[in-house]
View (cartoon, rainbow, N blue to C red):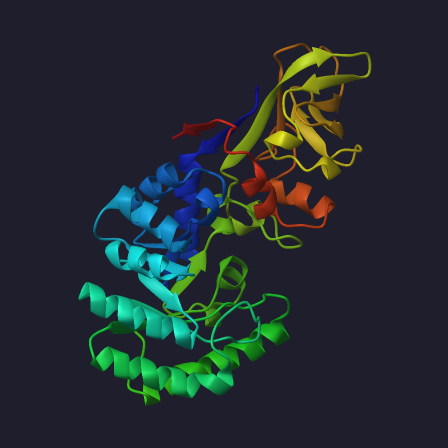
Length: 349
């Protein structure tokens, strides 16, 4: 294999600074799901912690526990998927903040907390219309009253109320925010006003100041991955932190062969000449994505051992991960996380 993913940790730090500057006075939660969006969990969280990031969004309790193992005590680690009693026990042992958006799960968490003689920090989730998960509005008043009872018993400490939004249109997001505001009021009426309110992810945190509240959950933008159909990374003041490269393994009459393919995480649909990859002579078309090798339009002087950049910051004529994603109807994060874990990661600072 000649492919490798270069990760620029200095660019990550610069992006973190840019995000925090933009969303202040709200605090940044760096989302590190899917092995930090394919960039490598441990180097990313260590770099972010050194830069002063104190909140990490882990998605599941297994990832949350891994972040805790890397960083030790101190940082707040938020996980919002717990599918079993084992997951709850893992969260308690790792001192995670847990997102809870289901009445049955709340009861199971209370049992686990009592068994462990622990008090668990909980963020209650209201479904504001995305229907990903969370408590429906009609069930919310009873849900927060029960949470208040469990807090009085010492099983939980309700520190947050949160939700996801679709970020599909301003009107839909405004409707979601109205539901969220109502949910905050119901929580306060039940005697559990949250100290941490969070609703926005990357796009809304930059574009809609009123959605920032106390905390914003930002993943893609911190890695320099722009939203599909949105402003460029440069317009956002961000830098892509990763570049995926592979070496030329053979030179043919009209094209060159490079040592990366579908088994390394490249969708075969990227072939066909629509995508331009970076070379020493600028952008060239990606003609075919095979299993382990791909074909790229030849350039003058191409030789075995030359480097081709599949995606990256654009300095050699390549597109970003989102540029590639838009051509096949997906998002930049999907391209980033598809890169096989067998592809070596090389870190630069």
